[in-house]
Image (cartoon, rainbow, N blue to C red; front, top):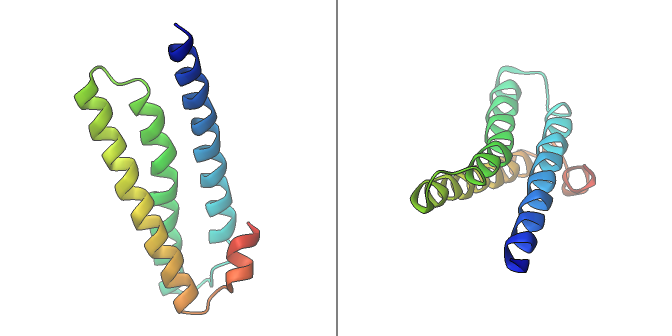
Length: 103
């Protein structure tokens, strides 16, 4: 019983952290240049970063272990994509590492 309570607490905490991460990325995306290229990256990073928390929340409400695993795999994929877009932002020098880390 204690383990279930601990897992629920962990899950709720991670739901909060993934939502906070989404908000931070949205804030970061507003600093990108308002060019066609900047808007593409803004859209991509916002979609992938907000998807992490949404899918994690859905995973916690999964109907089976297989459903849970599938949704967690989606979270992993979206996390990797978000990291990619952060790297692109840094490589293009649209934002400095300090600016990215400050949000």
